[in-house]
Length: 214
Image (tube, rainbow, N blue to C red; front, side, top):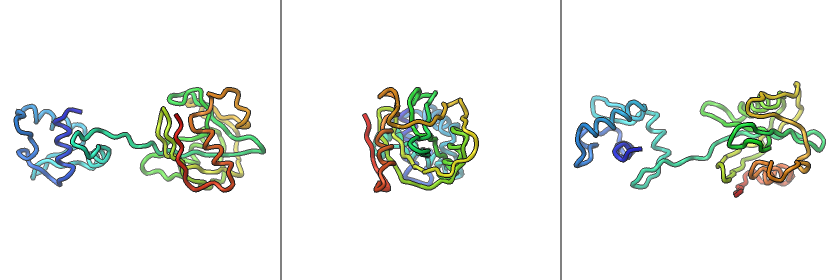
C-alpha cells in the first residue's frame, strides 16, 4: 500500500471525519493526493461526505488489521477454523488434503469460519461436506496452532452417533477411517496435528492449548 494511502487511513483511524486540508500531507501535490484518495474510495475503505472524509464500515475493519506503529503495516490475523473429531473403535475419521497449503497432508476434517456463521454450524457443514456424515456435536476446546505454513485458531468439536453414507466432496480432499498411529509416512500429518490428537485423547485435557510446530 502506498504511503499516502497509509497516511490517510492512519489519520481517519483516530477521527470521525477529516477535511481535505487536514488529510493532505505537506509537500504532496493535490492531484497525487486525490488519486490515492479516489483509489481508497474505489476499494470501499473511505467515503466523502459533507464534512470531509470518513472511514466506511469496511475501512474500519481494515484499519483494525493495521499495526499501531507509524508505518501502519498490515497485520495478518490468525485464521479461525472449526475441526471435527469422530472415532470408531480405534480408528479416527481423517482427511487427506488435495489443495494447498495442506496438499497431501492428513488431518481431522476442518474448515474456515466466516462472519455470520456459528461454530456449530460450520462443524456440521464441514462434517457433512468432507465426510458425508451427520452427527451429534459437542464442543471440546480451543487450539491455537502456529506452524510454518499458518496460524490457526481451531475450535474443536467431537462427533458422536454418526449417521449417513460415507463420502466427501472430492474437491478439497477425501476422508477415510484409520488409526492415527498407523499413518504410513511421518511427514503426512499436518504440522501440529499429532499434538492435537494427543490433546483430544487426554481425558483430562485443558479447555485451551497453544501449539507451536516448526
